[in-house]
Length: 454
Image 1: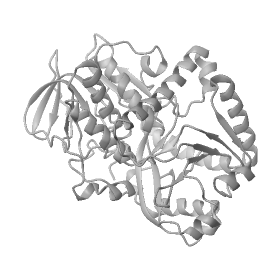
Image 2: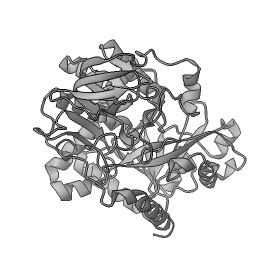
Image 3: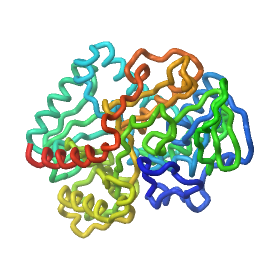
Image 4: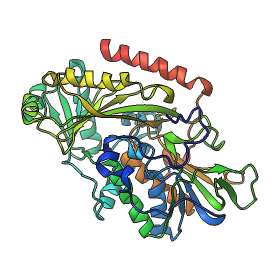
């Protein structure tokens, strides 16, 4: 599997992975939205966007609609080939991994509320685009955060109270009995809190919908067109090379997130940690199996572990279940990781001991050192002042990446963005960057001990 910490290219024209999403969409059987094909010649553009995932497509769409700038998007493989087409399809008001209480202590009340408002705007932006006619198998609203140990239920209750006080957020507290009776009888859940505004959808269909809207607005989307920065640069243009043509751009947006190739550009080097998330999708549950688990809900579910598990019931009564995967791309296809997820699922629902999974795949999410996404422009007066990026969603980017793309478009167009750490600070560099995976390995072992014993 492509490993962004080791490989300098994600490939060219590679088909989608064998995922549930690609299968039900017929993605590898020609059922893909129309694009502009691979670039076959030299071109001059105002804005070149590298990556046709949520961030790049949103940036292109908002540049065209709100600023009258028709960007060209360049994708090495297929639209949403990276994490945008591989994730679990959870739409959440999430701020990465940094708690709002921590933001409040670090930056004060005003900044904390500003970041919260941006996360809310991310969900609103997604909803508004879906409402333009994107068919993405949207499920009933509701996000359930379950306590994986009795003492974590107290923490969730405190979290709910804090969010109600700080934001007037509608958070429902569910005892273990209420959770089991009214939603699902998860034996690993000792109570939960439930938000009213999260939901699940088909992430690949969502990205395809964004592409259709963008191309309708005049955006060009070139697939099978990997891009690298030329060693030769002009004063007023950024030069990009592709297999069959050169791109001269006034401005360039890096929208590759966890799939950013090694050495793509100094502005993003050593500033992220790509981490594999593993997902399985089971065979469809029978009516008897659903009844035995009292699996009544299609709400999205996540637990309180440091090494989180997440799941949801899909429209065809399969269960999607996810968690951490391998550390390196080389080991990503080891069946151990899918089998481990299935084993955990069966501890949650003992009636499913004979259940098998039909799909297993993984994808790179993008961690930031400070647990926050960043949308940034190179410093003015420097060689990289015409380079922009948005990345570091920390596994919570399905909704916020679209808002990030919208803010990116404002930066590219020279418009002001909110004065928040998300938009005015660069991603911090990882210290001892070559040892990032050693740190990841250590964190995984720490998390396992913490989740089991503390």
